[in-house]
Length: 455
Image (cartoon, rainbow, N blue to C red; front, side, top):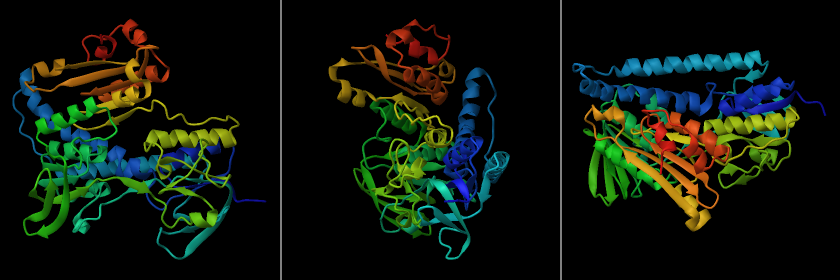
C-alpha cells in the first residue's frame, strides 16, 4: 500500500521529536502531530521550568552563607512576576528551537491532536475533545509518544487543589503551601517554594519520602528538608479540603491529627499515561493496566505501531524516552538493530539538599546478592560549609558485590550531586569494580573525591 508517511509520530515531546528527527536523518518521510507547545512535559511543565525555579530558590541561602566568607549582609526580595515571566520567556525560546530542529530535519508538523481511525490511519483534531477533524493522514509505521499527566486523589474538596502543571503559572506567590505526596515532584516543589520564601507543609502517607530510593538517601534528604524549615507530616493523609476566607483548610488524619491552612494545595500523587481519546481500540493496541504494552523494541501488539516514553510507564525520565525513540529509529530506519538498556539509569532529585543515584539501592542489592553485598559510605560536613556555619551534611555511598568487587550502585546527597553522579554513572555502566574506584586519583579538595577514597 501507499502511505502518506513512512513514520507518523503522535506527540511532540522530547521523545517524539528525537525519534522523528532520527528517522528523518535516515531518509524517512516523517510527520508529527502536537496540539500543545513543542517539548512536552519536560520543556513546558516539568524539568526545565522546575530546574530554573530550583536555581531561583537557592539565592536566599547563598546571600546568607556569603556572610561567613566576609561579605556584608544582602537585603533582597523576590519579584515573583519577574521570575515567572523570565521562566516562560525561556520556554518560548526553547519551543522555537524545537520548531527549527523539525524544520531543519524536514519533518512535517501538524498542529493538532491525532486519533486513530484504523491501524494505519489518523485524523487530526484541534484538541483532544474536538469532534471535527481537520485532516486525515496515513503511515506505514506509527509511534505513540504522548507522555503522561498528573492525577489527583479522590478526597472531598479536591477540586480546590492544583497540579504540578499549575505551579509555573501562579500569578502570585502563595505565602502558605500545602503539598500532598512524597515522590520527587512533591519533594522538589516543597524545597523550591520554601527556598522562595513560602511556608511549606508536606503531607506524606509513609514515614519517609521518595519511595524506591536508597534508604540512606531518603533519610538524609528528609532530615535536611526539615532542618531547612519544611514541615513534613509523615504517616498522615488529608481527608478533606475546604475553601474558607482564611484559605484552604486541610483536615489531616493519621500520625498527625490537625488542620492545616494553605493558600494553595498541590496534589503531587503520581502520573498516568495520556491515552484518553487516542482511539487505541480502533488501532488494536493493547494496554497493560493504564499504560501501553510494548516489547523490548517498543513495539505494541500491532507490529507496525510503537510507543515510547511515559505512556509506556517503564522508566519515566526524559532521557529514557529520547533513548527509546532513537533506538526504535535506528532499528527500523537505520538498519542498526538495538534496544534500550534499563540497567544503571542515573536519576536525580533536585531537592534541597540535592540527591542523585545510579544502580541498585542497598536493599535491592541485598535482595539480589544477599550477604555478598558490602556497603561503603561517608557522611561529612563539606568544606564549603565550614565557614557558613550551617550544619549541612553530605552522604556518598557505594554498594558493592564483594564476590566480584563490582560496584552495583552509587548514591549521593549534597551540592552538585547530579553533576557528580552523572560522571560516576559512566563507570558503573561500564561495570567498574571497587578496585577501579580505589585506583583512581581524587581531585582535592572536592566532594567527588570521596567516591575514590571510601574504605
